[in-house]
Picture (cartoon, rainbow, N blue to C red):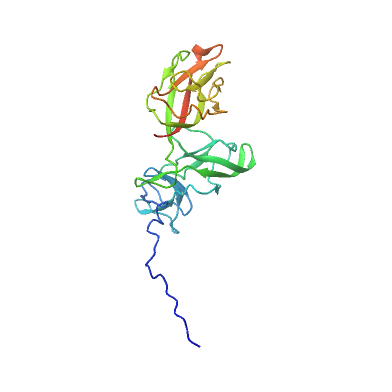
Length: 252
């Protein structure tokens, strides 16, 4: 019987971009990091892919693939993870691993959308989330652009719209939340499109330190016009409303 030779890889095929979603970073946290530990380094958020971890000062790869759902127990167990809410990462610095948290602690980064969790409110055991897309060496890792975050502090009367600096024509709003900074029984903040059209619904800003999220984003107004965007306070005590509005958007 004659044998038929099988030609293997005649055209020298290889996936030259297979590491696009695993950028090489330098560990500058001041401590060693473990395999599968989530870190935020060099502008990237992802889990360590090196089997031996990455020594302090050494280089290694982390996985920032957004086309997946992730589960981890690297969380603040006393938080409450609500499906659909933004997930944050609070770095631990040189002393401890960072943790995934349910709200910004002042220097956290938004890393994804919560899709599930286990445990009870305030006593969680793990969280599941869909990571945000990230840029890799100037190449977009997915068909979407990298979401960015803008923080707007309302420290004065906003009953007349306050223009927001930092957003441009064509930017697309994909999320809005508010942290109340003073008690105000009927405080409400709205993100507008700069010409009086409501992008978000009214977000309660009434109980000091409490975080509230937009219930709706109007997709007919979420891509900003040339007039940009503004924040406005409405309600019975509009002039007294104080808070921090956190805007997630995709740059034009």
